[in-house]
Image (cartoon, rainbow, N blue to C red):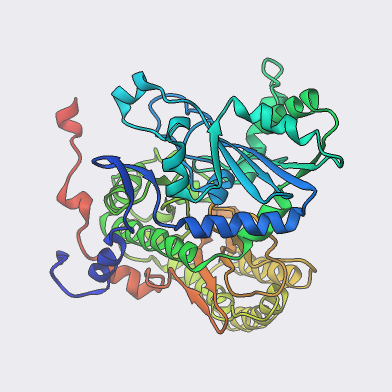
Length: 496
């Protein structure tokens, strides 16, 4: 077996160095404790707020709650929406953005000296001048001032419209679809039934200030988040590089007899070692029939010789995500049926991936790809009728989707893994998304899926995850190396 060394030249060494580059400087209260990010300068947050204020006009006011203190021994992470507009990472922060004066006021809790003695300094209302200096926010006040300031808005001749979140705020490892599922499940529980935090907040606003008209801020934020800035793209690239490093480590490490969750562990090591602040989503490490469940995440199966493995995993890097998937044979060598089905799928997948470009609609790309898929299908040899039927179903399904109005190639990626925004229109610079078509053979519970992250530029599409092996020969060559799990065997015997 070939051993890998960072001192040796090669793609993986280069990628490790890219991903390990330190992020820009950060302001600290004490050693190692950041107070405000410098991944984005205050001017970028100010520009985002200005664009929101432009859209709500002089008769609009944005009112937002930040995330509350997390339960348990969990590091605080701000909601995507609040962070997008402020960069502030303080629990129970609140925000008013006044369209008439174009003044933004941030409301913070008072200093909790007892808690700070144990956990370190956190920005508070007592740091108003410092917060303004760090963040560029116009005004900082204590949380109890929020009601007074909101009440003052009612004294205007024309009552402003309140814009706030009507959809669940996106928290740790959460996209809106999962937020909505959480709310729905809780409402369906007859022994719970509590509304979302957003619904509760709206209820309080309506109860205390019934004259205000309340509208959703979500469509405005969704539209702005659809197109990423250069700095946002940089964060997404880093998350994608780390995702690729984790997947490539899994390829080197996987072997029969391991549990699926062990591959989660080696990916996590690279994520945390190189600057991630958490998971973009729980790891999907699914061997054999488990892959037939697209979001299987238990990770407890012991993998067997001959299994085909799907791994879909990415980190959260400074509030920005990625989403990448690869397939691999657990024993390091593609079997005859794996070569046959994966080979066909890979050809069809590349028919989509390599046609993505700016200035066209997803439907146009899909229709072009479907023509190539049909030609590939007609020329491919299948060893079983059920494999041919699965391939026909895959191509016909794609052909049908290609003719639908308002279709998309995949899903957006940004501050959420399933990011907000409408991706059905003409592809334009700043859009970031993945594709992930799936081939299924239900009779044998076979499921094959790849996923790559794409950034659209003015003149091209950047396949950010393209460095991760996807060809059969490249995967097998990479898997011929030993990985971390060979260097660090499990301690099961010692732990008994």
